Image 1: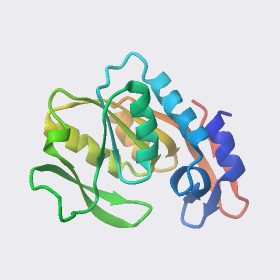
Image 2 (image 1 turned 90 degrees about the horizontal axis):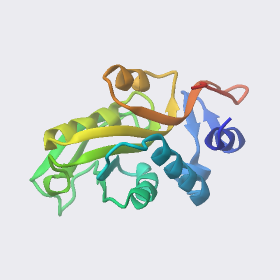
Image 3 (image 1 turned 120 degrees about the vertical axis):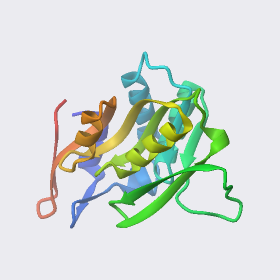
Length: 193
């Protein structure tokens, strides 16, 4: 069992509806030591890959992406989910359904922040149905860039996102892949790589 699987076993809470709450260390309160380990592990798994930009989606992926960007010494870009008063019209836009929030989001990155010269490592905290990753891949392709890989902290292996991305030929690395979760017993099993 790796460090992240141990942390999930110790502090994760399974909610009804196939939801894993890891708020106390990953996506509400941040355990910097765990985030640092995630960043180092992702960099190790993508060694040899040329990366000149890290891309994530707001909000929970930003912490991991920032630490990973620091390790690579490259810029971090995060796709925004909503328009603001200072949003530009000059942007790449894609669409993603959020499994957690049960809603569709238009996500965008302003054009100056992704180019055809970019070799992008996509990073996120969770992978369920793969919609956020597919939207980010679409944005990188709109920019003419290259997806160098996809790094995920926690993959829900019982959902189709990982399979879709792997079958499409993407280099996907997930540090912890959940195989089963049982709300009644609070038992979690992990897929062995």
